[in-house]
Structures are given as C-alpha cells and as structure tokens.
Length: 147
Image (tube, rainbow, N blue to C red; front, top):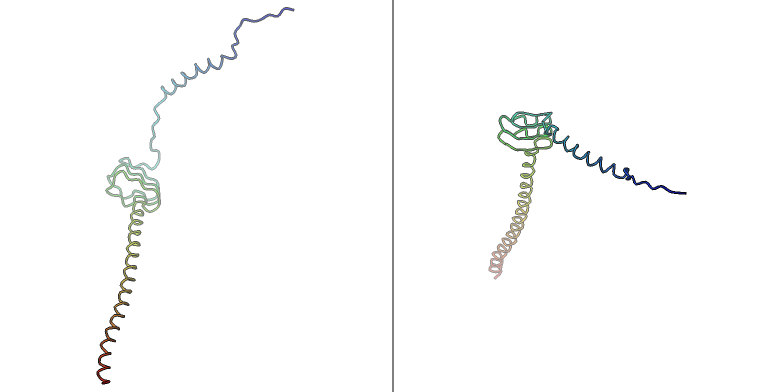
C-alpha cells in the first residue's frame, strides 16, 4: 500500500496570527477615529469651575474659582479662597483648624496645670519657712522671760 503525503501547508496554525495582524491595526484605527474622551461635569456644577455635592456646600462662594466641596455645608464659609477641596460635614477646613486650635488649648491647659502644681509646692515650702522663722523669733523671748 502506498501512502500519499500532502505538500499543502497546515493553514490552521497560522490563521490566528493572520487575524491578529489584521485586528490590531483595525482596533488602533477605531481608537484614532473615535471622539476624544473628556470628563464633563454632569451634576452639581457651578460657575467658575466650582463643583459641589451636598446641601449648602460652597453656598457663600461668589466669584472664587476651582473649588470642590463634597458633603453637607462643606466649604460653607469660603468667600475668598481658590483651589480648595473639602470633604465631609460642616466644613472640613474649619473643622481641621478647630482641631488644631483645640490641640493647642489642651497643650496650654496641661502647661497651666503643671505651673499651678509648682506654685502650690512653692507656697507650701514658703509656709514651712515662715513657720520656722516665727518659731525662731518666739524662742529667744521665751528664754529671756525665763531668766
């Protein structure tokens, strides 16, 4: 029996490669011809490139620009600031400033307490010295009267 060998190429192995070489330029052409993607504010946009989300957020703003306020009353006091971002409730920037000042007040309170303790210790020491001085004044008089 005679076997016949085929000299045809095995086209099944090269088909994915050919499709890939065709699809890559096609995909690149689609991206090149598609409209340019651009973020556009769809919700809660104000004038002067300000963005707001939340009740009364950025409500005091008049002419300032590039502010972003997210949350109830965020940046509510902002009237003169540009390029600010606040997240949270009740004006995150003011809350941050309050917390810094509160920390300073706590540090000052600790210093005052320490100074009060030192004053009390010094007062107690002065009372002891005063008692010793008075005791030394009385001692000579007692000796003089006994002679």
